[in-house]
Length: 282
Image: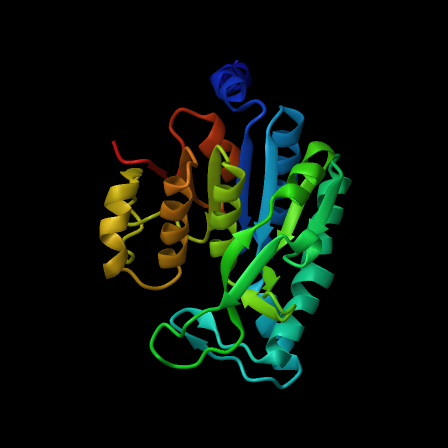
């Protein structure tokens, strides 16, 4: 009976979300842990089966770092952004597009839904420009998104699950490393997605990052905007992307704990949810 109750609880949400687009930023422990990878793939496939249109955006920072270290390349970050010369961008493209992206595509297919891997170069999906250094220090070929051309996503998403690697190119065709959180927010905004979901390695947006029990379960975009100036670390780009997406018409953004199996389904299809939900200011 408990399982029946869970299904009945999910029913109104499935009805509400049917035909809607959900952009999911995939990363952290959910990407690194073998068991969680499989559960994530099953969850995304389930979303497709019940009538949603999931779009997956991924990074792969830990794998990029591991390959750079194996190749003897320097690994350095400024303001949370990877300092990227041409060698770094080449490694990032090889890892993200050639390895991580294809593994996600294959995993989704194995669990029952065909997927298509994309990066910013495909169909001119992401056009970027060089991002100014956050502290005046040169960070190299790190991109800032100027435009998302969603035509390719609309065509692919009709029959397949789009899986997007976070690299892009400028007007001259030069490749850049791009923060995956920024990509997810920009894609959600351009698609006018119904929801944007970030899988992280914390319970959500914490009032006190050192206190795991200080979860902020709900917040307005205005509250987040007011808090951005006092934030740093990995939560800053996620919250910034949430506000950017909501300002562009996305209904709500969610930051959830990807270390928990099925956290995506629990946040979307249960009354309680498990993370932080951010909505437009009232």
